[in-house]
Amino acid sequence: MISYFVYTIISLGCSYAVYFLLLRRQKTFQFNRFFLLSALVLCFVAPFLEFELFKAVPSITQIQLDKFTETNVIIDTVDNVTIGEEVIVNPYRANPVKIIYGLISFLFIIRFSRNLLQIYKLTRLEYETIGHLKLIKIQDSNMVSSFFNYMFIPKYHALSIGDYESIIAHETVHSEELHTIDIILLELLSCVFWFNPFIWLYKKAVLQNHEFIADEKSVLSGIDIENYSNTIINLGQKENRVPLTSGFNFIQIKNRIIMLHQSKSSVFNRTLKITSVIFLFTGIFALSSCKDIDDTLSSEPLVVVIDAGHGGKDSGHLSEHEVEKTIILQITNLLASLSDDKVEIVLTRNNDEFLELSERADFINNIKPNLFLSLHCNAHSDVSIRGTEAYFNPKHQDAETSFKYADVLIEHQLDNFSSRGVKEASGFYLLKNTTVPGVYLELGFLTNERDRVVLTDKSEQLKIAKSIYEGLLEIRNSN
Image 1 (cartoon, helix red, strand yellow):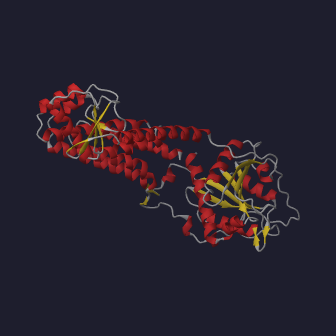
Image 2 (cartoon, rainbow, N blue to C red):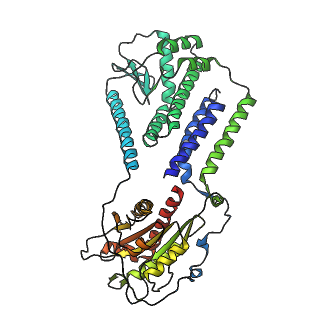
Image 3 (cartoon, rainbow, N blue to C red):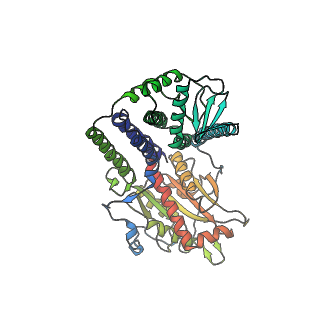
């Protein structure tokens, strides 16, 4: 998620720079509007649109599972298995950054909703029909503005006939061009991406371009350009606008007057700049939405040891005919088939064999992965208890990292199970005796009917494996 937010800042900044340097002073207003809105939406959506161009390294998903039959672990028969004792259990701790982000976004949404409610109340007032505009006289603002086909005008403002005609023509253009939709889109995006400085620059640029469009079309409709310019000067100093509206009084007067009287540049210059914009625009899209262009050249894979709990004579939890060791082995083998050049997965066991805990710990310490993940199924005497939970060792040197990874892995299981949060357990053997960040992930309760159905269904097992992989991929991308 952090990488996505960083991308939106960079890509939106680049596209705004293109507009500022090449298009801002061009009288290609409709194209400018298309560019601003398209770039805005594309920068936020493109990372979710992936297209495969080529693959420098074949995906391991193309390799048959029987390739994963070898193991470097020496197998001994051990009579007793000692599983670590849970020391402390803490409830799930929310990320303070997410809380702050959510709170600020919520406040922006409240402001947006309040502004919509304010406009709704104004539209309930009596109005006078002029063309397809509904003119409403209000006291709360001394600016002329419009919202779709509703036009708001100061109740006690004296306007000359020339000014009145200019305003009507101007607001009619705003209504016909549906500029209100652009404004609402920008407001909604601002509620979510308020931290992105370029979203605010985009809002200003879009509003300014709206005024340029309305000015140009008003003059082309037959209104004298000098009289229209004087109207802009006379009415352009007002304040107290109605929120979420387009208006005759908005944006700097100087810019509007200059643009109104400016001649269009040559066809060659306009074509050259628009072509340059299209190529740059396409580049932003291509760089953000194409995957598998061998990005491993600039980033190492996340190496993860997946430990399938139990095995051999250690069956783990039993539920009628369902055995924990078998369920976990099926999920880990599916997970291993998803191993690729981004997340490299190594298994402690890939068949029904018994491994002593000390052997598993030695194997993990020899591999030195970025993370080890021990997978299990849970059980409880109360059959109503269900959900997934993760454990980490708070006394480990990598405790903070382990907790962060556990938090991500739990979050990615929410489509499969309910969450029981991240908990502390300093007594688990592997969590105590390994030198890398480690997480125990209890995938669900075999004693709960709902969880058991998910854990034993083949299609659901694949879904669980994919969600674990996605969590590991997020961990890799956040490092």
